[in-house]
Amino acid sequence: MSICATASREAAEPLAGTAAPARTWLLIEQTGPWGAKALTQSHLDPGLGRALEAAAEGTDVRVALIRRPGRHADHHRATRRRLFAAHTAPGRSWIRTTTVADPWAALGLDFAALGAGEHEDLWEPYVGDPLVLVCTNGKRDRCCALLGRPLAAELAAAGAEAWEVTHIGGHRFSPTLFVLPHGYAYGRSSAPLAEEAVRAARHGRVVLDHCRGRSAWDRPAQAADLAVRALLHEDRADALDVVRTHAVDPADPARPSPTWAVTVAHVDGRSWRVTVEQRADGAAAPASCGAPLGPPTRMAVTSVTATGDPAGVRATVAHG
Image 1: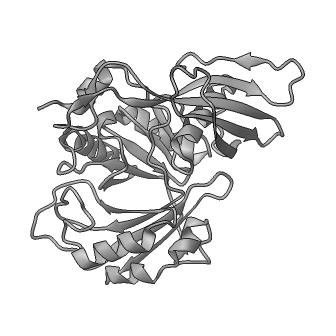
Image 2: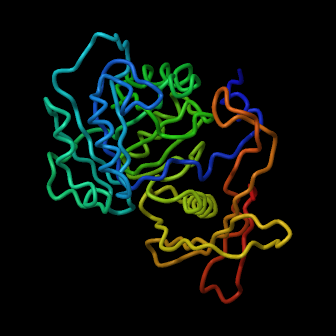
């Protein structure tokens, strides 16, 4: 059985544009073991899990279970649970939190409002270090357990506000982590990289090394954001925003790969048009452990053009 993280690393599969898209995250503490479909395969009432999935559908809210790093005995049940709601849009990021005795209370939330970034004074504002979520769900993919759990434990021991999480996408990039409130995801992580990402997030900044993208956007926009950041050496998390993404005709009609034009704006008024092409090339690798081999799908940035520039200056980024 293939170890997907090893295959992805050996194939040098690009990380940009691979974060799980979600503008808002609802995180529910659930101790004990998790199944592959954790919302309905854990000590959480499966009826509640199904109801949460239905409530979140189409709202741009992603629901995940979290737990503190450490041992997760099957018989251990929490009497009170920590809940977080976090919105990741640039300039509007926030985290709200509470503790509840009954997780069914989460169904009383206005999921449409949360997805739109409106917390409506829900719960209490979270005050503390950035939240670090490390994917550790070995029932979904064994790389997440083998590589993620030691990382989560190391971060917690170092004093980070670290939580294990059921799924943030991209098993083959394990260990994967996600930092809130800004919502940037990282792959092939290490404790030093994670600690650097936390330090940066404290000051409203993002680490570009091993960065997968900001979950507030879809994958073409994530890749575009990172390409402009690399071009400008811009690490302020809220300095850039994606203001438009639309499909365009591919540059090569003989190879009609899906292609997008993404407009990325800077807070100083500058903007760029970024062309992103979806490609399926490179060495065959499994999407997750045990999955069949196939060429990975990636977001390739082919050009970054400053809009309004009379010279039409174009910079072609290296990974395109």
